Length: 267
Image 1: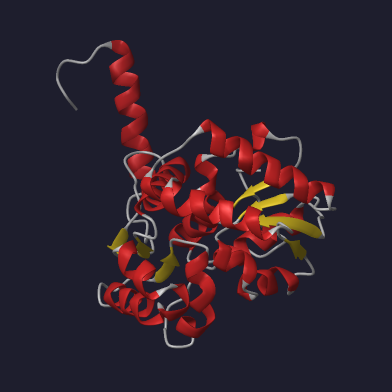
Image 2 (image 1 turned 90 degrees about the vertical axis):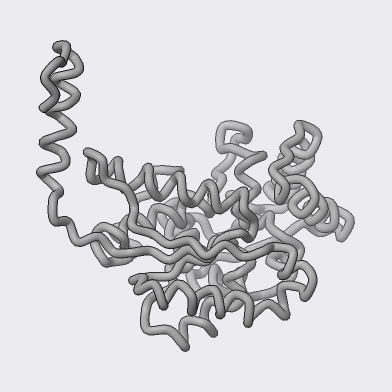
């Protein structure tokens, strides 16, 4: 213990000391994160995962994790549909670091999740499955999806929700889909946040609710930079934070929560 402590400093030191002792020897699972898709959301993953671990374990605990950050430009050059090798090779690099689970740090990257999982001996913690658990907990059966054009138009994400008896709708107008894609790629993907774009996304969400959506899935890990639950009057599902809930649980316990035991702190 340091020799010169004031009263409050001493109390803080005592709490930190005993919190650390309480969890000494904790066999935490090592998480491998495929990042860089984009770098802005990878920052959020790293921050939220470490905050979640520390909240649960206290003291100076933080996540054991390895990040393999892809060059997003490489994916843009070949297109998401042709990016399997890039994503899979990143997973292989993480496996070589002896990680216990893989995290794909983007909703769209989950296009390949099931195919990659078939080649790996460690689990992929799936973002759509985490999202489905939160939606089911709210007893919702129809949601609106705001995401990249690819994620909205392809079936891989909607099918994962449908497996959980959740219907998904997307913006009806192609011009709205293109506007969403432009903002994600040319603004949020570069860390640019504007009030004008926020208003557009809120309008898109409200239009989906008008068509019967009971809640909105923010199905791109950058969208929470624009929209927060407090901005609207209906349920909003932040897929990044829901994903992180599952990641933190796995890192600490080695288990992914069942639907019955899942409780999100981010509703």
